[in-house]
Image 1 (cartoon, one colour):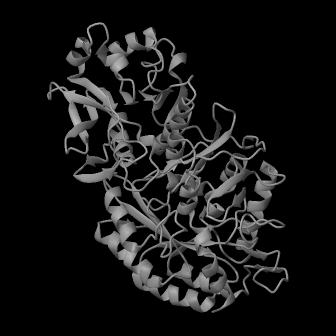
Image 2: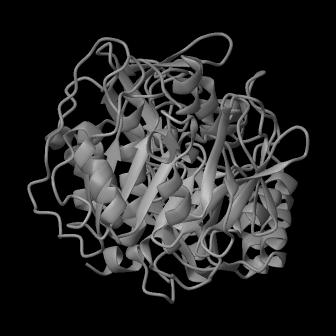
Image 3: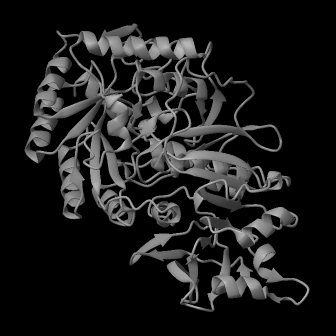
Length: 557
């Protein structure tokens, strides 16, 4: 087997990004649900872009959240994730704790969300409760504590005015297992670490509409997403979901109705060939190219502009550097793919870090480039912190160097893909100045109540503009992975990806996105593409959404 093939084959498990996500879900149960891990000591600084980001033009949305108790900092995380989901609507979002509510906040926004994540966090602010009774603006209550608004504690019965106004009443909160949500005749999952549900009952079906239900272990279906005119209630916190085919898909789709923005029903798809570098085996690329040509659908290829093996681990102990040039055989094959309709995504610059194992071999394609990571013998990762000398200038210089390599080889990338999907906040903001469109999921950083730095990843089902300024076209189905990752994650085969795409269809304008390493059997890609097409998805180039999407606008700016 040629060098590029066995280099990748030996490190495939290391490359599996979904495995990375699950590898660090080992903290407090609620924190694990949010895909977080404490970072080792090391500060980072948020630096703004030199250029002013274009103003958003969508609805003005207020997001209220809980704070104050040891775990109520999770409300800030939930609100940050919701703000980014609302980037799908180009929303202008204000986030603040419920305790900071001011007069007329509800009526001065087009819609308000209250993310109740802290159990019984005090009483509701009197002003907030009074104005909630009066407002006619869309209001969405998500999660816990509805009993503080809808229950009469003196009489120990449902609050009469609440039931009269909204047509449903509170039954109880149950910590029993409620494993399944049903939405649009589709079964979606609730994660085992989050079994509970606020149980409500419909009293007046003419006032209260049930959009989704949740089934308990006895088979009884409870209302999950309820609408009564302008007032909505979601019976748990879908923003903590970390798996595919989960209840967050129902919430994401219902955002259109909550905001009154009925996007067109359209199911688009794209896929990406991953980790092609200057040392890839050209014969294998040609074989893959024949399959891609026969599929006759648009696709993208993630190119690593420069291959570096600083320790010579794959080259007999001798440093090896190879760049994509117009004379490189890989470059010639990629130009043939471009002629077939491929689009190129810049996959970092070197996809590794010189002088260190970050965390595996130091060679391109194996390691992280824009963040420091360590690994243990069981496959679990610890995030160490930003790379040495991390700054806006460093990130711009790094990304531009790779971009210039591609341009000198006659290749114009249309988007960015962060190596292993992880960079520091300052790096993401800098990259947005060069590439307005990215194909990796957004990762966000914050501090918990103990002062520890944490991260969370957003599993969005549709295109959105994040708070770094990047328009994200997410990999919603994951990666073809015939092997899995230690005992942490099982293999992910075409049948798994197609099943995920079927669940994703509940989102009216969701993107079915997946990736595959270039050295895998092309038949796996063919099976996946054909299965997704059979579900009614249309494979399109990035930026080709006929509805005039965010990513198309970003690419034309």
